[in-house]
Image (tube, rainbow, N blue to C red; front, side, top):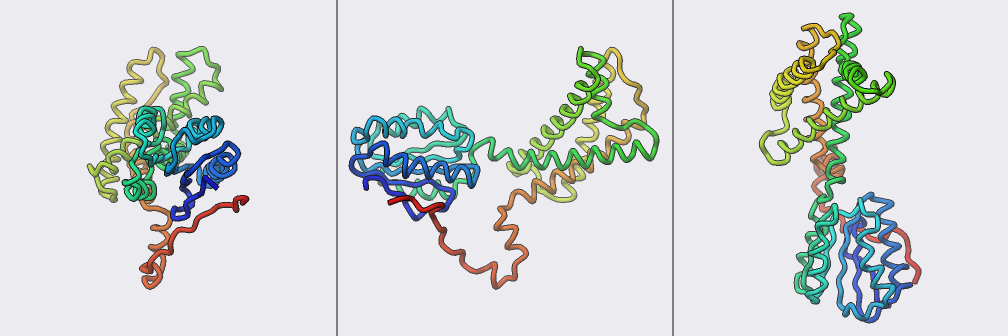
Length: 303
């Protein structure tokens, strides 16, 4: 067999070594099948290929598979390492790297250990993958904020319902009917929540702020002040604005504080991996044990 899967990698890594002549059937059966399995199970693909054969020893069909594999499951590629002593192979993947959502690195065979370390410990470099958790945090935070506004509207018999106000302004400015304008208002509301949460996420990741109750309160107050200014500006510029009382602006401050606290809490929780979070609840004599070596192989491959 001229292709073999490498066993010393975690399950979310597709790792293989090529020696001798490689044909299309072998490539499909071993490599492409493994890629499909990892993509289906983990939703992301980390990939490393160790080329100990010349590219001319790939059959034409296998070579086409090799070149096209980068575009398969396009949105799920996270990290890809090409390990080869052929300069032109490494250069080709360096040129292709801007086309992918993830990251591509190339190494000489002497750099295999470094490539292996990066593939295993390099984290998420795919923007879509790394944005998933902040997006979920924004949905939670925006839903909490909106629930607060709707509850306050019911208790005080006032209209503090931001999505409905947005929908009303859109309806008065556009040819959309009331139903479509209302849907657009809700989408705009949640989009703004996603934008705020992304900003918080960047501040946390870059170390400008620390995830804490005080941070949430401070960011919430700042966001509330900015939110009030944005709403006042929009309503002032709108040619036919809906009637809004001063109490609406006052409610935006506690609403944004709730939003920020929920978002910061979710982002803080998401910074730790599921394994790390689980270990927090384990007795110390369990959580401090050395982790077992990663197991490999999703499904048995035919011989």
